[in-house]
Length: 338
Length: 184
Image 1: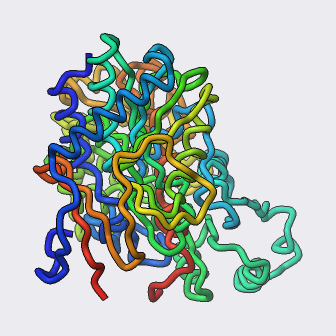
Image 2: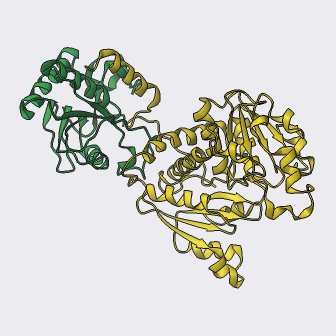
Image 3: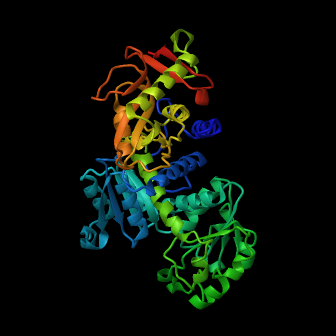
């Protein structure tokens, strides 16, 4: 029997969670582009995360497709290697029924010497609604956004930001812990080169979490003392008592400059092992943005353990990117100032 | 909705007793039409169809002595007016297999029929029901699509400038239906 309590409980949930369809409340991001979390407000981040939670439900269905963004088109333009970010954006767009085209820069006119600006303007003439751009130069997506009224999502620019990764990390923490406010998150590894670290620290601190940056001094950015974080150069001190350990990838391709003596030495002093994790809180979780260097920054038994959120992060990435596309494109032609 | 101008009040057309009787009658009609409640499931359209769905399932269950599954459908992602307004995305909660069941879709008001059109699309993506029937508390006319409810609590002829405000205890603290003039 459906009891009265059940009815009341169910409707209470409705009232608390659902703004009315015919009422005035709509959810809309008051911006044209998603370039970084540094310039976002806590309310905007909250809206994106809430929308992503609703979309996650869709990923569990047999028919993973809704007609919301039918007729909208999305271009992914990646100047740097990526499998998961690009695929994740494409799957997100396809679930929402948008059309996607991906430009592989290696086989494009860029290889013939076309400038970034000309590439953007040429693609723009094909009338896409949103550009998803990854570029090795910090600020490249911002420049593209300034050229046109269409939306730009930054999928990683140089050593600056990777907002969708920051958001999916926050969603993963929120789901595991039920909150962000008051948590302590250690970001461990190569902070200097990491746009993931920057997006995470801006987003997390806005949502009321405390952020620790942990790594060798040579891998800390020069401006680190101006950031709203605590800095640790000792791994054991750094992860003591934290709720979350977010392990960054050692970017082997960027390590030709002698920033640390050897991979083995890095692993010995900063690798995340089961023993070291005992210093964190009992219910701590471990995250990694991937791709992992198993045995370097994270030990295989940690990566495969039940406290590792790596696969959840990937799933949450699709949900977060669906939310970004919906919130940017769902509202029709961009009617907000850039 | 809460701060309508005082002169915008054009009166109550159903009170809580009217609503209870209408829902009881609909529950009987559903059972009669489907010769029992065996393959039945009730799905309410978020937001105000949801409490009505729970109430109908409770009534049908009481009459037939059987448990009737209830679900809630969010149709935001299937709307045809997303380009003009962007509602927040809610969650769908259908805790049973849709395929093979007779689904009674429930909403508080039927007007243009566009919400129901979206709901049919959304429901089809969850499976292949044996049949879908439509129950509404109020039919206010002005259909723009060839859609017709199977069960109607009350027909209320309205003009397009009027608004039918269905208030439910679970959401608004009281059961009543009012007609209001829309603000100019």
